[in-house]
Amino acid sequence: MSDQAQVKADLIPYSPEYSGQVQSWIDTPETYLDLARSSDFPPPPDIVDCWQREGVTSYLLFSHNHPVAYAELWERPVELAVEVCHLIVDPLRRGKGYGTKMLHLLYDRAQKRRGIAIVTINLFGQNETALGCFLNAGFEVAGTSKYLEGLRLVKRT
Image (cartoon, rainbow, N blue to C red; front, side, top):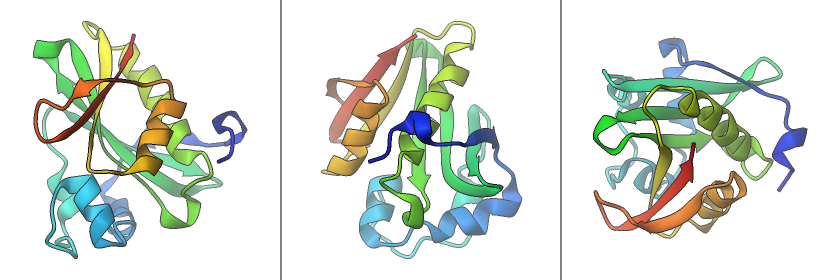
């Protein structure tokens, strides 16, 4: 995997014009299961649009004027936390540091929010590549997920 410091990319707010492109990155039933906990592959055409709601801020990672990754920050005020959700990287760019770069940039955004003590990620399933990405970005395993079977990772602000 490339060092994320070498990855040149910028985080920008998500725009619905990219929903079809982001959805196209959900390229296998395994990816969809890891991403959205659903086995109804392929996902519905409006899946990315359905993720947009109050309390969720969505972002795209752009490199060389093209989107290469997508993720969301979910507000978790009771936990004094922000959760990273639905992180997905363009299949042609996986393993090249873009996921790690996106996590670093999301963490930078999240830690600037008032009242945030931690940034969390819930990892469901046995996705060792995703786990490696999260650990590379400085997250630590803190136990099991509160929502479904899986690991809870945290990074303190």
